[in-house]
Length: 102
Image (cartoon, rainbow, N blue to C red; front, side, top):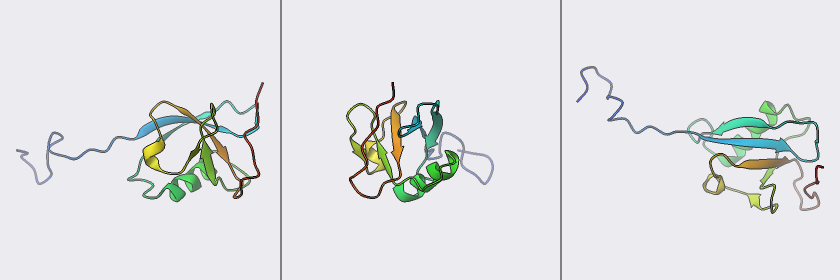
């Protein structure tokens, strides 16, 4: 039991963020950026994509997130795995493909 009016650390329901690395699609000079996915800060996946737009200083809004290996589209927080890498895309349609970076 805590002594103050707030619960102790052990009693709190702490939500930890999920660290990931994000790359820009087709930008071979972008080294990637480490970000933390936290549903408390960004309650919807759409708000997380908006956060990526501002964090990565994109000219266009980030609208999609993909895995770099197979190009699987990420549509929900449940699909994000800790310490994995992801690629951002701004296309709203299915016409944009992941670009290979050599």
